[in-house]
Image (cartoon, rainbow, N blue to C red; front, top):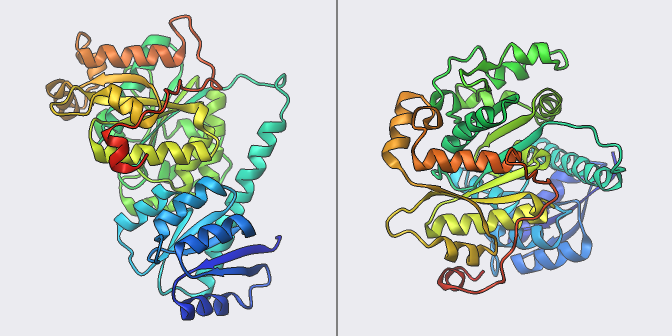
Length: 412
């Protein structure tokens, strides 16, 4: 393995010394710089271009989250590990949403520290290599593969799983092609409940298979839905998520692309490695948005991170539960985010709630509802079954920047 260059950012000098001491005997890891506050960390990251940055979450001038956001935008080749004495889920979520690759809770051992550094370095090296291969690939050697549609938002409660389930059924109905829904919300996915399916097994059991994946093996874990679509549910308990590795997910995505026309992926609300793999592989990324300020702030960060990762041309902004009383106007959302809404899904709470509680997708049971019509239109638009095939390279139409009250409030 090549030498891994590390920048240590912490406002406490003794902590920086402790980190250097823990890494002293690691022959493949070298500390190339130290920063004592967030602003210095951003400057040194841009100047030194380290492979990995150990970023304390609590620092003066700029905290670790703010520094991470700036570095991800200016030096995306750097991998950031957030370090904190806090192990709460909210801190982890904020770190991943900012663009960090890992999260370490103090105190940690030398082995834990070194292993985490190597892990994020290896993943980022592979990512950069794949980006290089994609950019050098000859456009004439393209093999037709299934299209991956990944749904994402770092804020929970936006209706992502409901949309994923009904969009999958809509694609199966409108295209008459092979469609699968993959639940990658590994700690709490509800696709199985949403569609009232009894799992033969989940992605957790599939991940424990020792043999390389082939379609006969994978198919034994897939649940057929009466719409014709197939489902691969999330683990039944959160601890099983640890059984699922990035490598197995990438292997699975490659195989599904060879055997299905459309792969719809529901994700968890964090930028973790497995979600990043599903975003990398996606042809279209549906970024969900509701008409409230907290969600706007999340989506702004999501768009920035996705753009930094080279996915700006895949972003499709979907306004969900549109028409809620007191909600921000869609036109104001578009101006604030500098993105046009690709689709607007209206709020029909009774239709949606009844369908969820019955485990029956409303696109099948409420064919005349406005929400069903909107999702069928979205499926048609994504698949090109209206005769207008959308290219994966096509960029969502940006609007001219204009600062509204939302922009002034959040400084974007």
